Length: 270
Image (cartoon, rainbow, N blue to C red; front, top):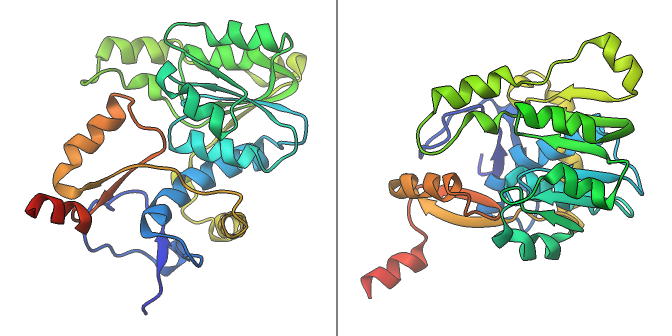
């Protein structure tokens, strides 16, 4: 009672009072804000397990991070920086490139105006060691082809299914049709790995997830990782918060809070 905790839950967190099993709560470290706590768990657990548990990231390797300015992207960049001499390629719209360079992305690529696979090959003809794939569809095939021998592709989402303001059924069908498929025998010839990750299906893996959280809390306490907050929105502006992400304006995490921060409220009163 009275502990400040971070919470993992599949859904139902956009409300003032939430009831979750104690096993899905984790003590917040000293000095962490509630906004940082809200931004930490899902993104950093995902990025950590993809890079280290599946990806086996080691010094002198290279990583391609899609949606590099988003929540998982910014977490992955920070975690890559904890390993010596990792080269990071990151896709994002051009307006976010300066921010990405500051955070440690050696090669930001504007996916809207360039073929990112070609751009990666110009700099690294053999490709990269690890690709983080939140896109799905034909991008998963491109990711697989970009892997060096012994490279790992970790797919953890299908952002390509969500196009524009409304779900476009034709676009969804096309993405589904273009979804990457490979069998075990084909993998033999390529010397590459394909992994699938979904934190939502780790509900019962308390020890596994708890071990990762302990490592993340340790990295936070050492100042090696720090959640990047793009913006904070009260519940009654949830539509604007969603729009911020939908229009791909955010750099870092978009956070919801029950009510507007006090400073903003005072400004409005004045």
